Amino acid sequence: MIARINGLNLAYTDQGHGMPVVLLHAFPQNRAMWEPQVRALSKTHRIIAPDFRGFGESDAPLWHYTLDQFADDVAGLLDHLAIKQAVLVGLSMGGYTLFAFYRKYRARVNGLVLADTRAQADTEEGRAGRFAMAQTAYTKGAGAIAEIMLPKLLSPVALQTKPQLAGQVRATIEQTQISGIAGALMAMAERPDSVPLLTQIACPTLVITGELDGPTPPADGKLMAGKIPGARLEIIPQAGHLSNLEQPDAFTGAVRSFLNSLA
Ligand code: MLT
Image 1 (cartoon, rainbow, N blue to C red):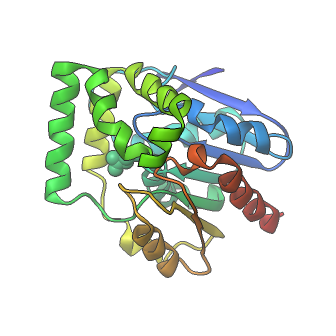
Image 2: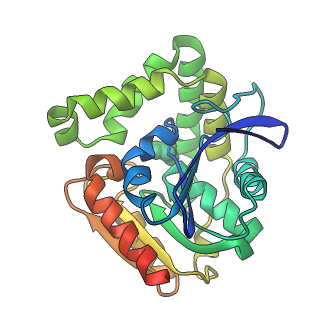
């Protein structure tokens, strides 16, 4: 489905009935990465999964992107769907967006799932890496980004034993527009430090980390769960950064038991 939000066409999935749950995807993926969770959780919940601006079937304007814009787009989509409150699940860049969303729209949040993400801002080195990746995208195309990102997104064991999954993640990256890749890199590079926000998060929160996650290792998950009052931590065995795709049943099970605890 497509909605006109903040002057752009935003694509989204809206499936099932019940308590609304919003799934926010990683970089440089799109809402297709949530297919196992949409299928399983839409039996009991209303699942909404947008493509961020710049990704999937959403518009990808060539301009400056920010995570506040991503958060505004999510809020605009909830308005469009007449949803006042939801549980929000964000993986990696989706999680960075949840911090921006919580800052601006905390009254709309029933619960948070922070998956394979981190509260810290980029280091100087990290920001330089984003700039270099944007130049690579511009000069060499999305295929070169897939080469760089695939070993970060999937664990070595998944790369070896799950060729179909690796092919799917690669294809999604290769189909992503350069304006979206560069825009999101700028947005992530400029994101503020959210560590001071953690102690102020007052809604039920689940933190999930893949045991083998390289970009946002379990230590990042432990830091968030240690500071967010009452937060639960779930470490998914045998899962890399895209833990929801490497171990979909364990990931979905953790989210489902969190949703049940809210009901
Ligand atoms: C993601 O999966 O969204 C990215 O790895 C996040 C990042 O590059 O920091």
